[in-house]
Image (cartoon, rainbow, N blue to C red):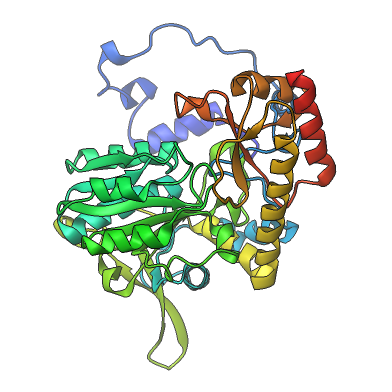
Length: 448
């Protein structure tokens, strides 16, 4: 948006309307010791054209998925976004509408949220989904708080194959309630050790938390983990890659109590890390402890269909001590993007995305494993992401391949100290055979 400055006359009128003579009177309550006394070191004014060109030059210095071939993953993926998503999303009816706070206004926005919830329920096999959360990490942390509220217990058995950043968020959220997250090893074999979970779980365990596919891309033994959690009357919380649900068994089938995920893959751009979209769904018996809000369908006094916010268990709507969470909004615009994306692709289109991602990931895994000195870090089945063991530190390989305009993946050593020579590689339907072959060839050249 172009910058339109205030003139001296504009400022005079505003100050007069406020009832002060000058800017000094306006900030009279700010202590003198807190005021900046030096001259601001600002450059001379430029025209709109000059500023636009300067910003364009700065942006051109960035390396992005549009300038490089991206094999980055770890929760944010370079999936194809149909052009119609952006065109519809930027319509003023969607783009200017804020998250609804009143139960009856913004019928269009409420309908989109209702459709979004319905699609998430169908994908996850769960009874109810909320209007969305901030992102996948905050959704998982909110699920942990919900498990504590439902059980009254304080221990959280947490697989260390859950996204490392998500685990940090859980610990931050847990601090105020004195919850006790306990890590269970998964890095040894690439999947969570069920026996280790069995040893960690006890009568004070509120939930067992896993990711499926997990951070290494491996598929977890979710049936065993769910059964083990329920045997001890704890909840089973699973964080999913939503794209995988077009192929893998829905969490509702294997007994998940709470399902969360990062919805950026549904029509969201990478955006240098955000804003993103948190997905949250649960069972019927737990619905009243779910954070956020739910849009429902009803009829008005004249029998016409309408949409309304049916559950709003937030501090703004009910007494604070009864609130399920202090989350104050949902990602309405990103949820709209996800709804448009899923509507455009449909069931078969989403399955095609998942199948191509999985098939291409396995092809690339074979190509990289054929490079001398490289091998898969784990034998476990995987979906679209896998860890590859290199003969050199991953950090140096990543830097070398960036020079070749390839984002090779994520250095697992930054999260797991003994995995400095492991690279986490993600493949989406966008990657071509030529790009994958070039990746393998350049990796071999760099190593030699």
